Image (tube, rainbow over all chains, first blue to last red; front, side):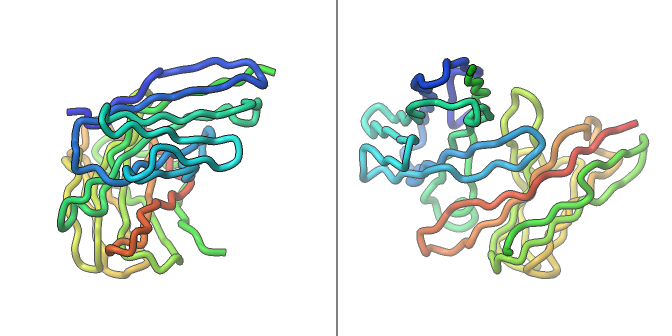
Length: 116
Length: 115
């Protein structure tokens, strides 16, 4: 049961282009949506996160767009650079009580390659 | 510097052996987690713990065991019952509670290989 569906599985972009990664969910109890960046052999690192009461959040070249009615959110990387080449994971947290307050459900990841 | 330390970075296990992966954090976080990462599978939750002396099974707990005797430590044992243990194992922590900070901090991972 995959609660967060991420696409595409892999993405190749030219330097300076825009990278777009999409995620969709079904659980309306999700109330926090982070994106993580992972380089080979390293643990994921939090990149940017959004709550469902806003439609967009921007931090530098990274923007999250959130569509609550469609239950979709996406990561946009503007002016993509070779150093952005990594695996990106979307995730979602449920506002459920008890233990479910703490669990993040992750998408399967997108391998981004930015060619110079 | 605060963070999460996982050790060892690489671990080799023989068939039928139990092995223990270490995870230590000095972030004063209440919650800790273990994830398994396989190519194309994303991150799958093995176990998590909200407080000391308490932990819950995640989605793929079979063949694994954990303990949480100290707030800073959350070791994972991969038992011989785990039939396909070769994977990249990630430990994470988060502040927990209802303060609104839900970001996970991950360690650098342990790559376990069965030989």
